[in-house]
Length: 453
Image (cartoon, rainbow, N blue to C red; front, side, top):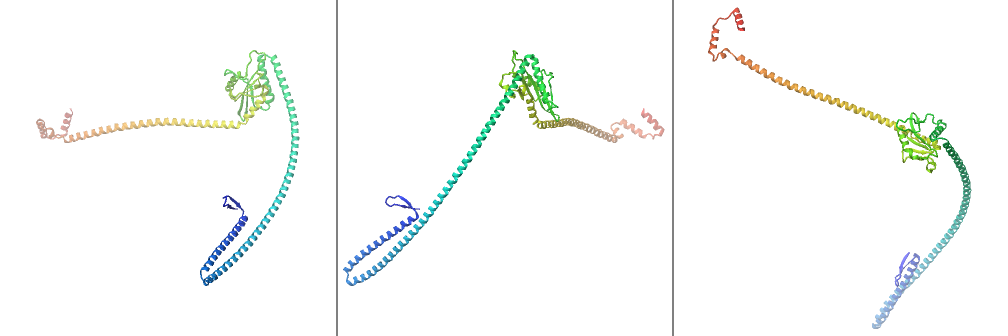
C-alpha cells in the first residue's frame, strides 16, 4: 500500500500498488504533454523572435538563419515525432499492463470466489456435521438422562428400603433398650441401693465372661479388692501378649435407685476413678454408669472425658463390651511401639547403670589414686627429711673427722721439747730421765705398773 497526500487539502490516503502505478502513468503522460506544449511555445516564441530579427537583417543572413531554423525545426519535429512514438508506446505498454492487471485481478477474483464457494461448502458440511453431532449428543444426553432417572429411581427405592430397614432396626433397638430400661427400673424397684450397684457389677462380669472370655482367655478381669491406698475401684481388666502388659483398664460401675433422695452425677466419681487408676497403674479409666438417665450427652454413646482426666471415658452398660474391644484393638496397634519403647528404656537403664558403674569406678580409682599420691608425697617428704638429716649427720661426721685430723696433727706435732718450753722444772726432769740407764724388762714392767697406778 502507498500513501498519497492531497496538495490542496493536505489529507493523506492510501492506494494499492495497481492504482498507484496507474496514477503514476497518468501523471507521467500529463507532465510529458505539458513539457511538450511548453517547448512548442518556446519554439514559437523563438521563431517569432527570429522572424523579427530576419526583418531587421538582410535577406541573406535571414535566409541563412532561416535555414538554420529550418534545420532546428526539422530536428524538433523529429524529436516531437520520437516523443509521440514514445507516448504511443508508453500508452500501449500501460494499456497492456492494465489489461494484464485486470486479467490478474479477474483470476484472483475467480480464485477468491472459488475459495469462498469452497469455504461455503466446507462451512455447510461442518454445520451439517455439527448438527448431526449435536443430534447424536442430544440423543446420548437423553439416553444418559434416562439412565440417570432410572438409576435415581432405583437409588430412591434403595434409599427408601434402607430407610425402612434402618427405621425397623432402630425401632427394634429402641424397643430392646426400652425393655432393658424397664428391666433395670423393675430391678431397681426390687433391690436395695447396695444391691442395685452390685447387680450392675454382676451384669458386667457376666457379659465379660460370656462374650469376651473366649476371645481373651489369658486376660485378667477381676474385682479390685486392694483398698490399701484408702480406696479401690470395681474391676480391673488387663491383657498380655508375649508376656507384655499392653492394656489395663480400671472400671467403676455406678447406679442408684430412682427413689433415692440424693441424685448423684457422673462427674462426682471421676476424680476418685482417676486416683484409683493411678494407684493401680492402669492405662485407661472407664465409668459404667446408669446415673443421669435423662442426659442426652451420656445416652448418645461413649463419652470421652480426657479433657478432664487423661484416658477416661463414661459409657452406658450396653457399651461395656464394645468399649473393651475398641480399647484392645487400639492398644494392640501400639504393642510393637510399646515393646520398642520398653526395650529402649531398658537399654537406657543399662547404659545408665554402665555409666553409673563407670563413674563409681572412676570415683573409687580417683580416691585410691589420691590416697596413693598423698602417701607417695609423704614418703618423698620423709625421704627428703631423712636425706636432710643424713646430710646433717654427714656434715657432723665430716666436722668430727676434721677435728680428729686436727687433733692427730696436733698430737703428732707434740714433742717433749714443746712441752718443756718455758717450763724449766719439767725440762730438768726430762733431762735427768734421759741420763738414766735404759730399763730392763723387769724394770719396764714395774714402771708400767707404777704408771698405771
